Image (tube, rainbow, N blue to C red; front, top):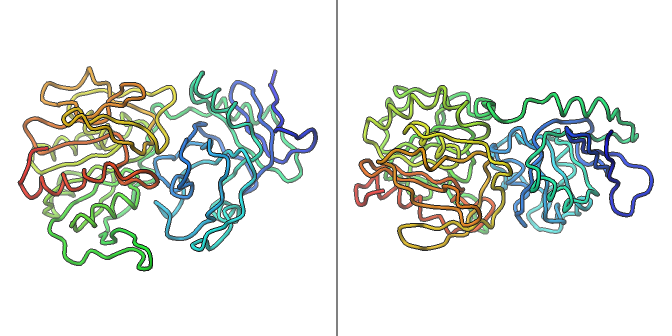
Length: 391
């Protein structure tokens, strides 16, 4: 029997629901597009950057619960996006979307959600939902919005139950670019917007498994000409560009599924001896290429306040993270040294190879949104291409 939860202070009509696969129903007020969407329900603890979060390709297949109660304050604009078309399945909020109060806003967030077909729900006890996810793991669910308040809850429960989940799902192919392109847009500054990299020192080929734009901007800002290739690129596709280094991007889904076609390419690129840098899914697939294994996490790490320890320096970085799978540290080969570890749960957050100029991290050093503690990693990659230091 379905369990029903009405929003605080609401004893009557509702226009939106979140239906979980176990039959739990959260009722509230629909926002964004009308309709329904199925996915894995997760939560993000960031206090800023909701537009960047909603457009992060790594959220493909997921419905995002925002634990911060006020979403919409800065409206929406065409600059703060990480990809052209959002891949997230929907969003859950505590309060109604806030009216924009920022000089950079060009439209209301609710209008922006409608334009991209994103279904949302407001008026939900997000603390209760977050505790449920924390204690029982990320569930499959359906978020639905109907202005007339009419929902076939049994059909929505069946839809949530029937969704296969992220484990074993290759979502990178859905968000990767379809053809090769060049990238020269650098960092954003007040009054000037995004810079253009006109004097690059190195050429980086970025393999796109769902790359965030700000990662590419950080590479350009660090002095790189960037050529982006699809996630299905072969060794030959990469090497014909004569790169100085190779970047493995972030992305969604199960790394083992994406690895079916990506791991052979990464193995071949490791044999070239080129400097290589991986982030998030790129970190996981580099590890797979080295013979390690990955596994699904009960909750995942999603937020902009995750402490990570650099084991070499002892320094603690506050990081931005978004991942639901993790590298099993005990399966890493002897020539892979663990460099970073999560201070939340002790999981692996980074590796380097002892005999090659190759390293990777699980978190998001581009900080979009989030702190900039880890921007040094882009400089480290450039230093490897310059032959000045080991990974």
